[in-house]
Structure formats: structure tokens, C-alpha cells
Image 1 (tube, one colour):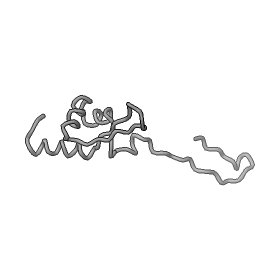
Image 2 (image 1 turned 60 degrees about the vertical axis):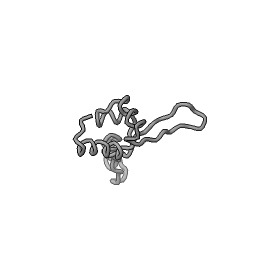
Image 3 (image 1 turned 90 degrees about the horizontal axis):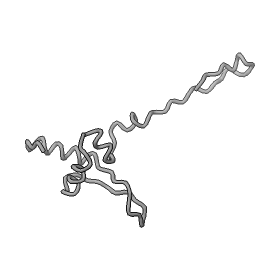
Image 4 (image 1 turned 60 degrees about the horizontal axis):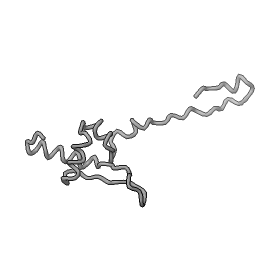
Length: 95
């Protein structure tokens, strides 16, 4: 946003300060849910393993879709992914 000198143009000296918005990638540093691409970007867990962990009951997710629609958006709970990874470390499992 460009600052305008209103006083030089004969107006009042009062101006509005520029508004600075926080970018989405900075605002969501600690998200509660991520889609498959977000999980892969953050934890390097690919989609196939992610769904395998979900189907095995190791992590939680929610499917968002409109009534009557076959397709939707699946979001994975970050806390359950972290808990799964902690259990892997505590148990000494490497898979």
C-alpha cells in the first residue's frame, strides 16, 4: 500500500496506517488438522501410509462432504499423528 502525503496536496495531516495481514502459511504454524498434502509436507508421511494408519485406527481423521456427495475432503488430526509418532519412539519401532 502506497503512503500518500495529503498535507502536501492541501488535505489534512491524518492518514491511515497500512494494514499488515499475516500470511496463511505463518498463521497456521501449529494447525489442528491437515489434509494429505499438508501431512506429507510436514511429516513426510505419504498418502498411502497415511490412509493405512487411519484404517488401522492409529490416527484420527474427519471427512468433510456435502450430503449426497460421493467425494469430499479428508482432514487428519495433527495431535493423533504426533501421538502415533511418540508411541513409535517410546516402543522403539522404526516403522
